[in-house]
Amino acid sequence: MIWLIILTFLLLILLILVTAMRPSQVSTSYFELKRRADMGDEDASWHLNREQRLGDIISLQRTLEAILLVLTVVMAVVSLGWLWGIIAAIVVAVFYGRLARMSVAERLAKRLYVSIEPKLLQLVAHHPVIIGSLRSVVLENEDFHQLESREELEHLVDKSNGILTVAQKQLITHSLQFDTRLVKDVMTPKSVISSVKAGEFLGPLVLSELHKLGHSRLPVIKGDIDHVVGMLYIQDLLTLDDKKSVTAEKAMEPKVFYIREDQTLQHALAAFLKTHHHLFVVINEYRETVGLLALEDVVEALLGRKIIDEFDAHDDLRAVAERNLTANNVPSKHTDV
Image 1 (cartoon, rainbow, N blue to C red):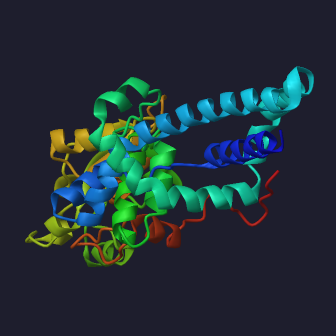
Image 2: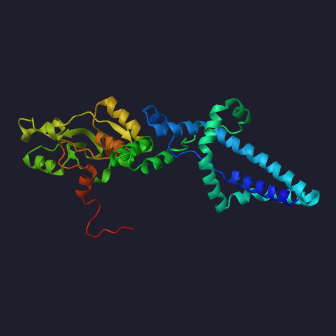
Image 3: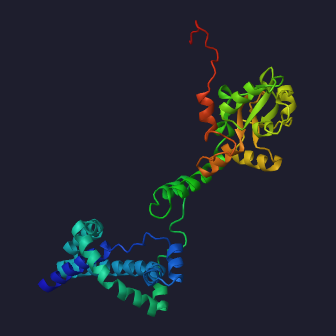
């Protein structure tokens, strides 16, 4: 009788240890393991082989767990009698999973599993037919690192220290966000646009002021900023023979392209490529001017870094415009409410 109770107790301990085993997949993706293995990395080849057979190992574990549970219940009934045996069997069935989650059981189970895992891999490899008949778990190795959202991918990129440089992280992150960003997010707003009137003569003083602004191109207006009639390119002025007699209207490029502020940057980039133009006037639903969009703005949003125009004296058009704010609606006795 005593030896039957001891055997039942040993079966219970073994059941707890087997249940506490946690065969887990490696953190490296299946794709990366395969890539390294193809390059001759032996360690990666071993882990790849393990990943391919891990489902069968877990199936073996569950099969053994079921067998041990049945044996423990039977031995409890045999050693303690029907009444106490059934009571003990119910207690075991209810609580053995909780006992397996105890830290002591998990530590012992981990040591045991690490020591027998190579033998289990050999067993699975040498007896595919038998193991196949017991298979209850199939791990999708290709998909176990499948991403569920763009935000998750951005998080992985942000945490990829040592793999990607800061510049590469910025490029990937901004590329992922590119199709959701709007023109109004990166444009130079209306309140800080510098412009030149169509009838203004481009004398030395005017040219000097334009140069100080630091822009390579400016909108030409008739009346106000809501009536843009052309674009003035500073580099084109260098080739004019008689600047004193030339107005902005005569020196400007008369083609003006408009884009809505609620269009995506992806649409804007396609429009830049189609028109071969470098500057768009941004309008709202009422065709009022709300800003300017340069090709550099879109490319910078895509790359995540600033681009310096060869004709610009400054590297940030928006920053330059903000430094040249005009006194809009600020008379001496003004009041904001």
